[in-house]
Length: 94
Image 1 (cartoon, helix red, strand yellow):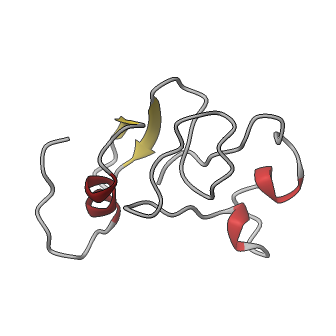
Image 2: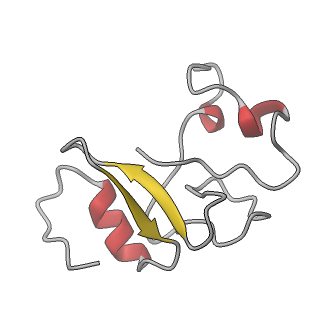
């Protein structure tokens, strides 16, 4: 689970910034991660990806209960491996 990208100027605007509990519209509560969905690198990125207002990082909560920052320039393939809990693949150091 990670911070969702809300583009600059879209805070409290429609589905860009809906509550996590709004299950009526998928973009309100979900984001993709991996080769086709890298972490947003700028505040103006409008892709439906993870992103943050923290320069150079995006915070993620992991299944072990820890919260750790991932660099926005993390290899998208590694991000995909981290994001898939049951693929059996080895995650390289990141």
